Length: 359
Image (cartoon, rainbow, N blue to C red; front, side):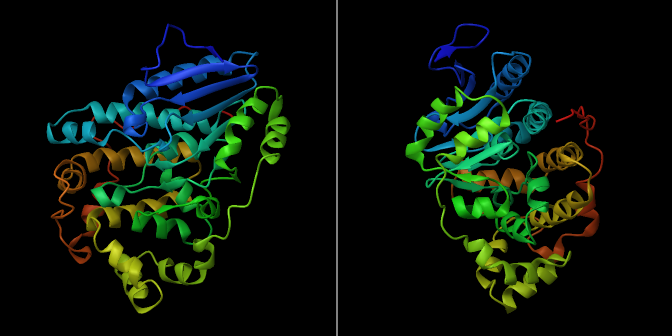
């Protein structure tokens, strides 16, 4: 493949851009960090996508991750933690650019293929699950673990989860779980299962295609069976348990039925983050489009940055790794409705306003 960046790059660059025939290939290139996303990567990808959108020689764009561990383990949480504990503003600027990139991918004028191989978390979902063609493999582990660290699903996650079949998205969001290929497809994060061994050949085929029909045909030629979805099999009790907007009611239904394990998991998460997540999902269901949901998520994210639970969650999971966060408030019943509502107030420093692009 030929290099397609505006300036010389080396294999140490955080994102690599190549063209192979009619294919523009984006490779996230921080394998030691499972390609965790930072501000530089976001701006580089946005700039290149804008170039390729205007380049008639590029017919299709694909996204992959370097290394064999995963596409992207999410955002650079340690940097965000340092910003939060230091009273900085860089995280809010990062989210402005990141969420705009998520919207760009969703509205991209050329076929966009995302290979969700290995670990795909948080910001990695924002880069891949809004693509036109979303591929999972036998190694895929896809999730939004935010409530574990006192945060709330973002990068359009509440848009996707709120539109999942029944209450599957609510279950996945509140438990902060990760799912494999079949469940990722059942929830609506992915469209196709392609065995990992077929991915390289698929990229070669995409270099020769033209238009959506050609891309769909190339993918169809290598798709396989992901197996049965556990979430789909559990749909009856999941829908019954999560059908209320009251979190205490959800927890009661889970404990009384088949969801006792899920209730125990949710009880370990930040009570504030879980309650705000449920509210964000319910609001997202009625919002008109991805951009409007991203704008809501920006408000919530900025307020999360200033919450004690986010700093405590990252400390417990990533910094000290004692896995013993001290949440405040400590229980779901102690999280007031006024506290939940405060996360949806206008963001300090100004709200996000995204351009509406025609798909």
